[in-house]
Amino acid sequence: MEPCVTVGLDGSPESLAAARWAADEAERRKLTLRLLHAWPLLVPEPTRIPAEMDQNYWARRIVRNTRTELQAHHPGLPVVGSLVADDAEHALLRAASESEMIVLGSRGLTPVESYFLGDISMPVVAHAERPVVLVRAGTGEDGPRTTRTGTGGVVVALKLHGPCDDLLQFAFETAAARGVPLRVAHGRSLPVDAYVPWGVDHDVAEGIVQDANKLLSQALHPWRDRFPQVDVTDSTALVSPAKAVVRAAEGADLLVVGRRRHRRPLAPHLGPVAQAAVHHARCPVAVVPHD
Image (cartoon, rainbow, N blue to C red; front, side, top):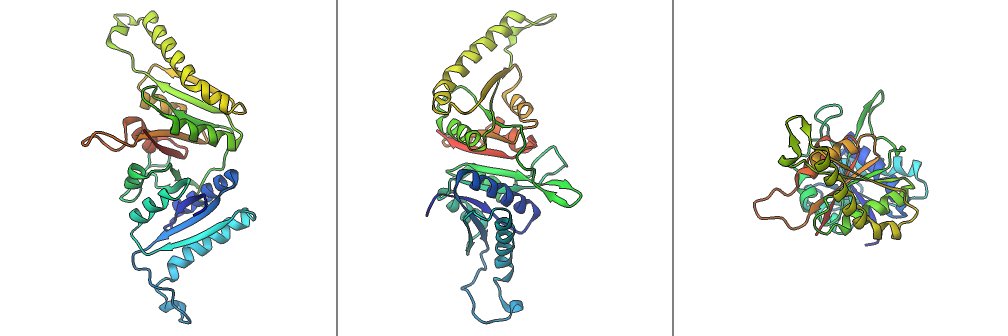
């Protein structure tokens, strides 16, 4: 299959918001957009039967209506519909292996403070071999809708231990495709010896920041060379990495976080930074698997 961006559709306003975001991104990257709807009860395409007797009617309608809306706003974008006779989790994971990225809608538990990752989203985020982007619909006068790209740029969370080439490649490519700045966020909790009776030892804190900034510079140097058109800034915050990333994502167009492909058997599939991002960041979140 040719390179594509796949979006999962279930007929909800959130999945429509995800489809709009995916169409924008596919157009930027000059890729085909694939609209995927999975339904285990899908039957072979019937012929010449009334709509009320067609078991596939609503499945086809979800894809058809979404395709019509997207092509009206993106007339030059190749869009293909895909109806799959499978449960959503299996279909999305298989589609993820065939796509440049997969895009899903997320439902907010509260207006702005959290994501709800249900039975479908969490396994896909945790096991997909390609980046998964979670898009939440905002609430306005005309109902849920997604926010179009603004001027907040792309934020990527960087840990500075272990390889992260896939993460940085996705972040730099996305910033370059959008023509926006890339902000690299890194957080470090202060060690016990940094605290003194009157507060924080300035010399210890300054040393930690200088050490982190040096490592950031080294990690980003080859990527700055590869993407000279991307305006890159980096910063170290002396707070927990999760808190630093959520703060940095305020006002961003997209937050990019990593997920280790290989974790200890009893360890959670998402680390604390990715967990904080998908639950608390207000912008779309891309979870990128990497070694």
